[in-house]
Length: 73
Image 1 (cartoon, one colour):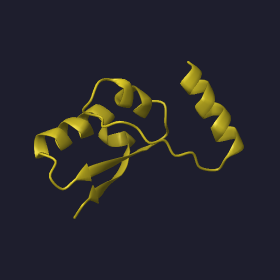
Image 2 (cartoon, helix red, strand yellow):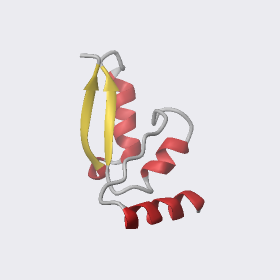
Image 3 (cartoon, one colour):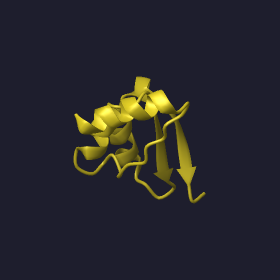
Image 4 (cartoon, one colour):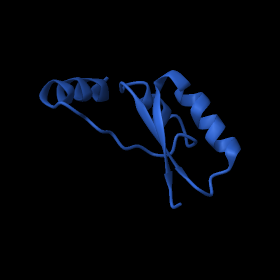
């Protein structure tokens, strides 16, 4: 509830609010946080196994995913 309130307050004060989180394949914190924001960008290391990427996309929901950044290319 406190995080939701903080995001509402920040959204009222700023045009854009960016939130960085732990990997979505770790415990539920990142996945829960992803539900509190308008849209998500998935950052993938080039060495990340395809299965983990697919699981992350499923966890976030394709409709809530703006795009992907491929890191360390």
